[in-house]
Length: 534
Image (tube, rainbow, N blue to C red; front, side, top):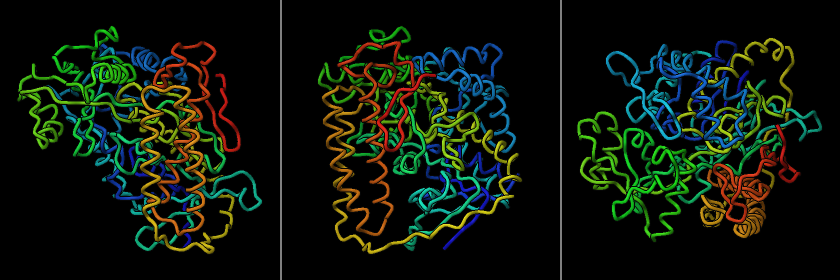
């Protein structure tokens, strides 16, 4: 089956939905998501949206905090643009129905690690859920937007595959319930598929976060950058028998303290901001203390705040901890770091346009330059909103020109001699192996030897996966395995090329930060990752 549209949006998180809602003013939008529209990493965001709201704050302070966290690699023009447009993005969300926490009639502002002021707009401790709810309700009222759930993108369609120019014209998409692969053609294709936390054994991300957009764009020939910078959230509830559950940084913004088994508060030994240090610092400090003491976790203590405050400010976290027998008001809770956010991605300009004509990237899939070597807390939803709106406006203004050219004809998906799989264990085995080696060798602390081991094993797995892929009919599990292998390869090769330690990339063989590495690590299919100055 074949579909045609003006805008094809892959992904239903905050970035994709923001784009869809604004782009619908200019043309027809088709949103494709591999599970339900509510199942995105955006929905899991607890902390909030960083924006300059209070009179005592300024966009210069927000920009300085962002650059400080980014360890010298933030793109200045992008930082200034995002922080300047934050207030308007919040106003727009409220105009379309978002309900944020208030105090005495004004927005209640939280503070998180790395921020010098209270500037985090939030909806209790479930901000992402409220943002996605608001956007989905608005999108569902829009006649120009159609949404398809349980559809997984297989690969981008580029004309170079068929002897044409270097241009993306859509994507082949698997319909999960029927197993059919359909052809989706578009005047503009927008990748907003989110992050890749599932490439690691322990992650705060939902199951959908398998790096699909970055992997597809890389295979198609688009540039990606800075994949070595993978953020580990410092505090995920330690519960070996349960799913990883994020414990928001906002707790530390309200005074929570990290402690060792003996009750010692240790963060002041690692950074002047102590428990409010940037995420890279806190994650490495916890990793160091766990290895030094042999403990499986550290403790997060907010028992100095009363129960009524915790129930009002953090109702979801309180309830989730209680499921596992933890009373936050009475006792510290056990926490560990986990893979959280991909700071690299598909390179794009100030309007989301990538290096490949016809292809745009938004949200965690994109590399805008905002986050540098380490994302400042609550800047991710900000980036999704700002760039989602900008991309829609830019593409909308050019839609008349795009419509003047016919959508090209391309062949439909061919299954060839592929047969259904009768050995699903191969997929699960390779999936588990990739995630374990990424955790053990390419995690919070790295070394040259670990990266070499990881590279060798991932190369062997790539051969096995490629052989399996071409022999069997595609399934969502197989596509996700293929994509996390590609992401793993990109993270490893990018990390190996950066012979220093900076932000989220810490290599014990190169512990110093070097001025000559104030560059982006760019990767493109067929080339080794290379450093590009700015």
